[in-house]
Image (tube, rainbow over all chains, first blue to last red):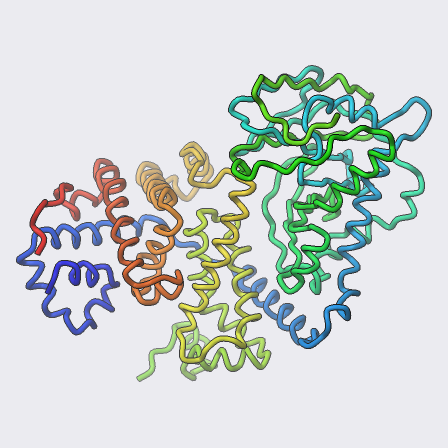
Amino acid sequence: MKCSETRRLLQEPEAKREAHPRYPELAGHLEACEACRHDQAEVETVSVLLREWPSIEPTVEDRQAAVAAMVAALAIRSRRPRSLAWSARFPAWRPASAATALAICVLLVLLWPSGPGADPVAAVCEALDGVSVWSAHGTITPAIIPIGGRPTNRIEVQFVRPDTMRASMDGDLVQMLQQGDTRTWYVKPMRLAVIEKTEAVDFVKLFSVNEWLTNQAVLATPARVVGEEWFLPQRVKTIEVRIADTHPDLARRVGLNTIILHANVDSMLPVHAQAEGFAQLRDEIRALLTQAGVPLDPVRSQPSARNTASDYLTLHLHFGYGGAADPAGLKLDLPEGTTVLDQRG
Amino acid sequence: MVQLPPEAVGAGQNLMPPPTDKELVRRVRRGDREAMGQLVDRHYAPVLNFVARFVGRTESANDLAQETFVKVIRRLESFDDRADLRTWIFAIAANACRDAMRRAKRRPELTEADGPDLQLIRDFAEDTDDAGKPAAMLDRKLRANQVRRAVASLPDLHREVVVLRFFHDLSLKEIAEVCHCSIGTVGSRLHYAVKRLARELGPELGDAGGIGDEVLGDQTAPAGTRG
């Protein structure tokens, strides 16, 4: 028996090893070969050491949830005619399309000038002047007043090479969180007005988590609970929902990959929803800002070689309703050589 | 004589031998909910533990395990009855894990393996069951954490084969099916992963009064003695 054969046999689980036709030769080879004995010792050591990692025992609820998800998936599959033409499926797009349209409306509302003296678009531009603006992430805020909390709007900006960037904040720095390469700053609230006509939109229905989750024809199930975090003063559950694999064209068409819902744990109403890869929405926003007279640089594609998470710093700016406008509250000091991906003019 | 699971004997109501995987698959295809329950009872725990160890996140393991079973039901029509159901489910779970890890790389978060042992100590302090043997329990938890970290530090491809081989006793052929690679590749990945784990865990846990030294003995591989 060769050493290579011995090593291969040693790698098999014990039961399979013993059932192998050449197993009787193994003992003889091991007796004669010190190197293979060493390999055997290593495999046994690792096998024993790994037992220190205890197993997880799923709960009854976990199993029940799995069965329920399977039943739901089976029901959907049996409901959907396989030969249905793509055009016939169009009605199933409606909820996601409506959400896209709603997202645009909400952002428009949040950024549109309202009331005398208030110019939220200009305020945002001023605050973000000199830094990059819209990343590939669009962020929308349904106008739902969370229980005991303050609705927030989130705008994301990205910079290249966080290790060479220094950010200094003036004004009230409320909170800073750091997770991996993503740093989140919660800064002094700014005034962003809500136009009254948005009240005609049934946000609760459109953004009800249950609506999203039960709309399994379009959205992938099960939704994944990514985590929970304190979004003071409320606890927020982060739920990731994706367009179902069965609708690749839809995902491509709306440029939407993932929807992240941040839902209040108690009420399960969304605090805000975040859509990843929302390229189309981003373009719409740029168009709207241009119409509003906000000068924008042409979109520049991100350098693909650097397009990894570790190369970017993502800054989330959280704006709340009703606070005093303070565009000077944020100043970013970018050192020479820092590349700004998409800078507003 | 057929060996029945204790719960079946204890219940005294179902003395039939448990259905085979093939029977379960046939019934699940017909939409039999009870069969789905049996399928989940049989395979959920292994899948849950596999994804938890492969991805390295206990908190999202249930989501991934659930996702796996939804994919199982969606793809069951294409399952070849001659194939091994467990291996097939593991292959689906492994794909789900790879997707999850790709997503996580786009949006990096702290993994359990990055967490400090302080959390363990905090958990330990809150765990009243540990009051009897505090030092031993803490030591056990720390060891488990060391093992978890060592496995988490392996490259994805190596971690996958280690988990399938050592925690689920899959043969090299079965692992090759799950990983969509050759048996030789599995052997090679396993070889390097075992070397690394033995190097990292053997001395560390041995120093702490563990079993590494007893089993492994001399850590120096004898050179030039291959046949």
